[in-house]
Image (cartoon, rainbow, N blue to C red; front, top):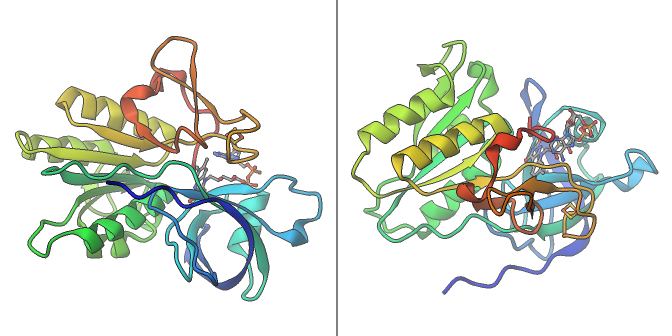
Length: 277
Ligand SMILES: Cc1cc2nc3c(=O)[nH]c(=O)nc-3n(C[C@H](O)[C@H](O)[C@H](O)COP(=O)(O)OP(=O)(O)OC[C@H]3O[C@@H](n4cnc5c(N)ncnc54)[C@H](O)[C@@H]3O)c2cc1C
Ligand code: FES
């Protein structure tokens, strides 16, 4: 039986450290006492009390780690993420967490395949570590495919490589397979044909749409972590609607129905509504 999801709560947590990773990426770590309970795939709404009235809304961030030192991986794309990536030790941040549906448990007998792009690596690294903690010693590591524009666009690849059998792909060919992450995934799916797999994917919307299509063609179940602009994070503002595959004209709400959903439930043709960087 799966444990019930931990209750969300508002808390003020001080920053412990902010580690810059280059190219606008940073890991920001906080102190939580009592520890923050959360499962891989869940997220937090973060805002600094020092912001005043602008930016007004908190920013959704997937959890990279939970517990005594919850952490997020941030990519600077605008004002909120720039402030988070520049956070100083001791600075208090307001957290609403944990939120959303985590990744589903791995079906018995299936090998996990994690497909990441950009900051989408955060909830997948959390998942890989969770799986490593729960696995029998003789169980094979999860498979992982991680893509970026170039070798500098693969934050936390080393950490992912410690808990998964990792293939990287870069569009400029500077590291690993030359081409998009889907090139590497196609090869992996061909090599693993006949084996039970479970895909988990997080990254830019067009990447996840392509991964969902490859998974469907190969008959492999796939979960995706949805991206959508979010104002509340818990089902009140209805700002995070994502078109469902069926019935036509219906919507999923990324914050409460997701972010982790069966990829078949999404109408991927609808296109990005604000892409996760
Ligand atoms: C469930 C979830 C988990 C996320 N996890 C992470 C994470 O782990 N690390 C990370 O760096 N980012 C993550 N994001 C994206 C992050 O929330 C946005 O990049 C952030 O809100 C942008 O805020 P800003 O003030 O810096 O930029 P803004 O000035 O608000 O916008 C700059 C650009 O980012 C786009 N954008 C704005 N808000 C969002 C949003 N909520 N979702 C997608 N695109 C947006 C806009 O279209 C614009 O092009 C996640 C988003 C969701 C929905
Ligand atoms: S973010 Fe408000 S309903 Fe989803």
